[in-house]
Length: 141
Image 1 (cartoon, rainbow, N blue to C red):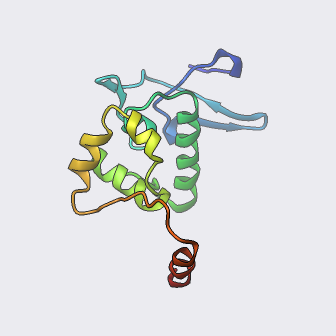
Image 2 (spheres, one colour):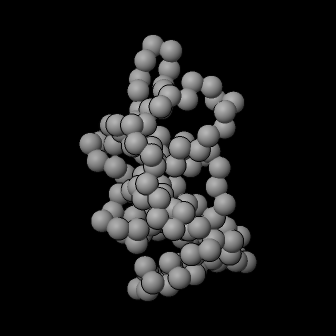
Image 3 (cartoon, helix red, strand yellow):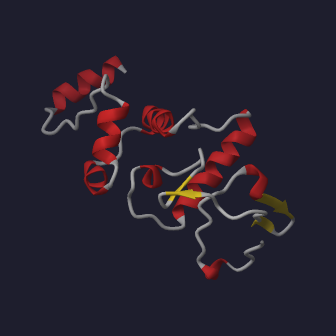
């Protein structure tokens, strides 16, 4: 299946290296099978964090997956792929940082996910830190 017109506004939701076709005119997306879904969520280790967290999403999730595919082509392995959803989100947070609180508040699986996945890690949003303390933190980094 080919989607040559970007104005069609289709969310693929299951991009993988096998679905990317490079040609002289650009990049095309192909699919030989239907995206696999479970509970309305993509079963793909290249999923965007908003999909994993149960946030509303749009076609930007395919750009995330495409970016992950480009990284995989460069380093030989998917950047955030884990053995399960928990491991995937843990690896994403380690590199990208925790999503903003307003997004965590909207996610349908955020509270359960973070309490279940990372009980030993405490991600705290620090507010009202004096600038002198921030300077000290930067010196340590």
